[in-house]
Amino acid sequence: MSKLLEKLNLRSKDEDIPHHEPPEHELNSLRERYVKAGQGQVFAFYEGLSKTEKASLYERLTSIDPSQINTITETALKLSKDDSKKEVKLEPLPDSATASILDSKPEDIEQWYNSGLDLIAKGQVAVVLMAGGQGTRLGSSAPKGCFNIGLPSQKSLFQIQAERIWKVQQLAEKKTGKKNIVVPWYVMTSGPTRRPTEQFFEENKYFGLAKDDIVIFEQGVLPCISNEGKILMETKSKVAVAPDGNGGIYRALLTSNVRTDMRKRGIVHIHAYCVDNCLVKVADPVFLGFAAYKDVDIATKVVRKRSAKESVGLILLKNGKPDVVEYSEIDDSAAEAKDPKQPDLLKFRAANIVNHYYSFRFLETIEEWAHKLPHHVAKKKIPCIDTESGEIIKPDKPNGIKLEQFVFDVFPMIGLEKFACIEVKREEEFSPLKNAKGTGEDDPDTSKKDILNQGKRWVQQCEGIVESEGDLDDTGVEVSPLISYGGEDLDFLKGRTIKAPAVIEKEDTGS
Image (cartoon, rainbow, N blue to C red):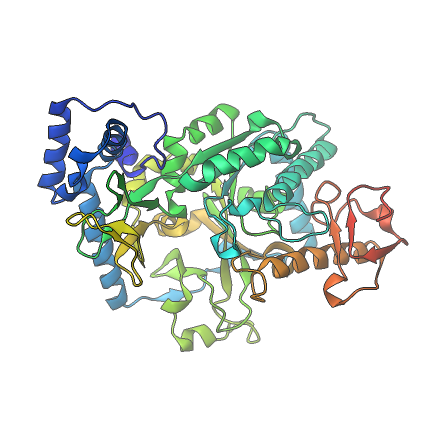
């Protein structure tokens, strides 16, 4: 099983490749495997390559099982067709599996919070960040976590999240009196983002966190496939590959030895999230305490769907099992249905924000189910080379597919008794960065505005006064995570007047 997992988690970069050609008998054996699988075209230009190029291509091709790729592709295409024909029964999650910050008892929330801090103090909590994406749609080729959303402090997403980890460690120390509390941060990158991410962390001195407590690792890749089922070549010497989706996290935890590192550290509870949410509460004590109290293997945060037409995936029961259903899979009548218990709310309103909890005991079983996770088909325009003519192809319409897995594909594989969901306030915890500046929705301006508005609320809750002389876009306050994780420790602002836009970086600041 472990060999199969390694085959499916292909390395995404060609480092440490020997600069010599493989022995002829090994090359012939490999070529025969590909020809037998109907994928012999990958060797079309082999004889004309340099020694280094031959070594590079051979190394890549040995990491791929062409027969397995054929099987995955056929299964994914069949699944895509079958899913469109199946009738499904959709229901909201039962009350036993859910809670809401919006209407929970304050004493319950406080209990979860304190319990979460205790777990952090015991060294049982780790964080996994899914940070494989580039800022292409933002006009940047850098990893999305490096992006500066335009805050007064000019902090990147990586820095904001690192500082929240530092602060939650301090909160746990303050509560328990323990020193040197560590929440290890595991940062999952992709081939194009790994080295830039490593460099960014190095240049910024790991944002004040200990280097040894930040582990940067890489998700796997899968070959891109033509519409005819053939493995595509990006160049004469390079297979066209793409990251295997955020669902590749499970195999990557194994092949990168992250799970082994967690085990050595005594990790019991894991918080996993996506890099593009500037409001994410990293290692949120409330979330951790809630999941531990429920004794579940997977928990997830959701926000309330804004309207029946909002394009978000929903967490619910699909044929009796916890799952995520995309908005395109729900018809209008279901999308607009009202909750019988609360008629002013939508029946299906639990919007997925890719913010999850895992028990370590569950991650210890990855080998038992990872190979069962489905692959999904994404039709794409894939630059490649024609293996017959050698012509470079830059398609203007989809010419192939990329295969990917989703992190939530594992949800239906666990029993409902081991799954929980907690609704949180959107304005406090969810502001995704998806689009280029000026789009007006989920862009740098909305991310910046949401952080500044949050800071303004926090100041006003502490009876501080916020005044603005600028336009409506500059009425907020940026409160550094180093000062406050979730609105706490701001009593020093009581009665003070803050001129917006402002940055609160330390207690004695006048800015």
